[in-house]
Length: 203
Image (cartoon, rainbow, N blue to C red):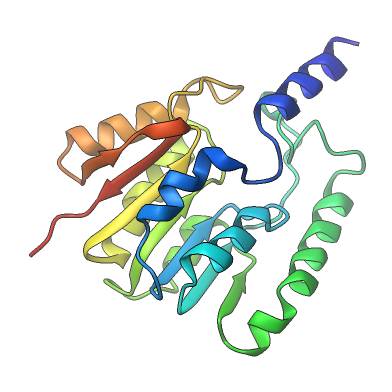
């Protein structure tokens, strides 16, 4: 009963559709650019990026792995899954089908890899923006920020979800972002609607 209640509360706070709360961030991302989304899930926000930002090329990065550790009990890629890895495999196949047309046109590339491994496939300064919405624990967010920052062109944007939301990940997003900014890695553009938008230094 307690587990089901936690899952209902989490779904209320974290709907699968992008919703209006991300609109101001979408309005600020560069148009017709090259971007990457880290943490794709079912591709709802990917679809919104394609519709609003209209990137020249969008890389979708997600391992689609089910986590069985206790700390992921309230996660949609952990305890909320009904059939574990089988659910994640099915979601991955759905994403491939959902963006089949864009993939055929060379607009979308899907990388089924852990985000840090996928980062090695990009050259430095290849990307104009990166949206981080993968594993929310501190160590993972910190690694994503550090790995993808060099992949952005000067003046490019690092963005992501759930800033200021404590969640089951125990404030990992906020801690990692605040530390990254404090280190001089990027400057804050906005922190609206639990979305962080950072800009890389310009040359």
